[in-house]
Amino acid sequence: MATNEAVIQKEIQKEAASSLFKNKNFVLLWGAALLSSFGISFFLFSQSWYIVNVLGLEASLGLLYIASSVPRLIFMVISGTVADRFSKTKIMYLSDMIRGLLLIGLIVWFIAGGVTLWTFVTFALFFGILDAFFWAAEAAIVPSIVSKQQLTRGNSVIQMTNQTSFILAPMLAGLLIAFGNYIIVFSVTAGMLIVASVLISFMKVGKVDEGITNTKGFWETFKEGVLYVKSSRVLTLVILTSIFLNLFLVGPVTMGLPLFVKHILNGSAVDFSILEAGLAGGMLMGAVIIGVLNVKKKRGLFSLVSLLIGGGAFIGLSFSDSLWEAVLMLALYGLSLSGCNIPIIAAIQSVVDERVLGRAMGFISLASMGLVPVSFAVTSGILSLGVSIDHIMLGGAVLVVIYALFVLLTFKELRELD
Image 1 (spheres, rainbow, N blue to C red):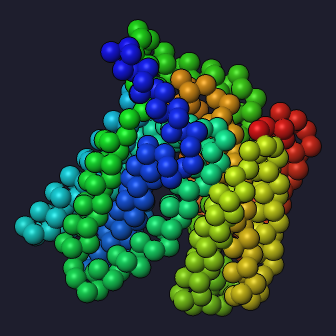
Image 2 (image 1 turned 90 degrees about the vertical axis):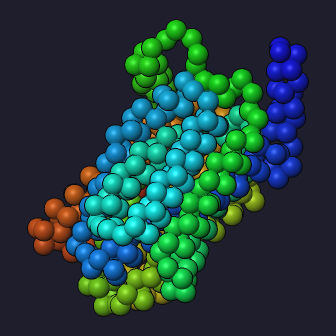
């Protein structure tokens, strides 16, 4: 057994050092990520459109967001600990397989009749929980199958896949609904998720994937992760930066863009869709550029400079008074987001002990995702005071630029992080 394990480990190390698409484990992970992201995007678009177009309950869409985001945030607290204690491939396999089986149940429900808003709320709740565990395991397994020299490129490929799904999946789902029906689109989604789980099952990662199997209890392992993050100045700074970025930029752009189109640009729904495409296209372009550059040195500095550019682009957006100027600023903002996120994640995957990587990535994801609802609430509160959305965007961008400059000039360890 020991000899076989040693052979497996040598094969894994050899694959990790090879080019990405000669690496069987990475190709399987990439295929699973492609199918998973397309499948989830299909599901999110289709359920929203069904509630709006068939049930006529536009005002109830917020319930779906609450049903998926709140459980996701709660379980993100422990998802990293679960990823460190158990097999990451098994966690991803079960997440996708269970989601696929849930959708088969939804198809049966459609055939039997009686699908309501609460049907989708229930499914959104389960999907949110499973999302939390899948994301933590996926982020933590990449360093196990990709060499440190290829980490930036590997993360950029995964990011490109996710961004492509956000752009293409709604269009494809819309075509399936227009020329077919909801049963067809949910059947395709279920098939994607089940095939993704099968691809994950073929991954061979070896002992590094088995997680912590010693006598430590779950909460002891969780506390160990918290102490590790607290003791690392770099991780603390990355988490604080994620909080600033999502509190002052991501929330205002997500919630405020429709208001910006309506009240500042005096635009239409088509203009709104063009701006959304500009943002997504910028993020996709950024992921492609980062993948080509495959940044290996000074990744912390690269991320901070990208954050400064993103803040500057957001300031430019707040002053935009024409559609194409706003599209340009949003595309630059999206590009800088990829430039900020991908290198810093690769750097963390390089320097953090793999035994606690799941917990570290889980806490970073929590900092990123957790502040978005808070940002929505703050933005809503400021809007209720009569402050216009362009001024809110400007204020948030200026705060992020000031913060990024402060970190860049003050903290050498993040500036010089490779």
